[in-house]
Figure 1 (tube, rainbow, N blue to C red):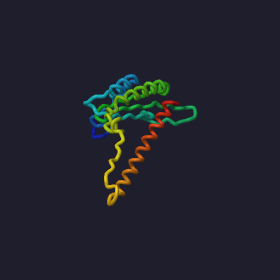
Figure 2: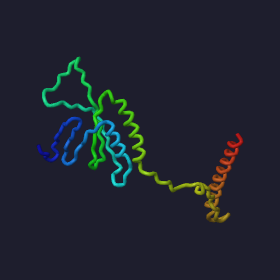
Figure 3: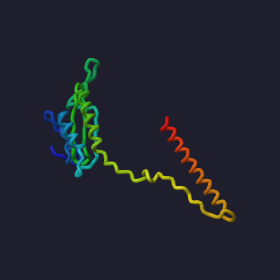
Figure 4: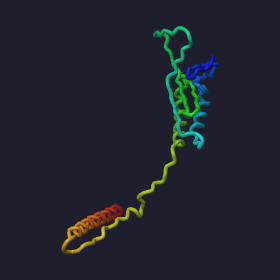
Length: 180
């Protein structure tokens, strides 16, 4: 059989399933191998993108032939399929049995937590208000005491007195907090 465009071809051999979509192949790994490859995918690398795509869904594989009719006696249990890719060629997946789900979820969540922290972009230092920048600058009072422009002078005086009143209140509150 040959691949044609996006035509999907499945090759089932033992524990390895490959889904061929064009030139990319997805490898089915054991649970422990999946987790180790996932930690490698999460390690920061300048050559690889920071993006990771993770999917999980119920795996319903029916071999060729008649569909199994469901009855109350025949309860089916489904495996869970976990896939990981970076979007640029690295793809791998694993099938988790229902009995192993809780154990796998615990280790999977710890890998995710540690990996998400490593994938975060480094935080830039804040450039902004620092301690010296919080010093209040009082408006300079300019203008004539009488005549044209006196109203502007009065507004500046009122603004300056409001700022000084706030500063005095802060000092009183700080003094009360330290003595209490």
